[in-house]
Image (cartoon, rainbow, N blue to C red; front, side):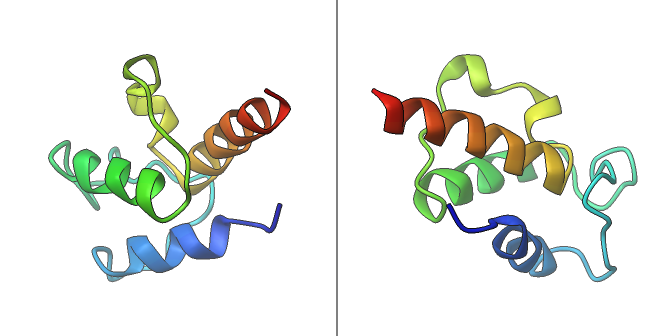
Length: 82
């Protein structure tokens, strides 16, 4: 699977004017708020092809580029193995 971090950065760049490190917490830094999570979930599902279940809706899965990439990697490897 290709590295999805650049795609996540591009998406976040539409909403965040500053460069964000992969491990930086975008919520704690004040770049985005909790209402943004729904846009982020839709991006992950529609653009990255990773369905999000209720149990995935934990802030720690979405609070950084690295966290999103790891969650997508886990979920897509599980779905590909099935």
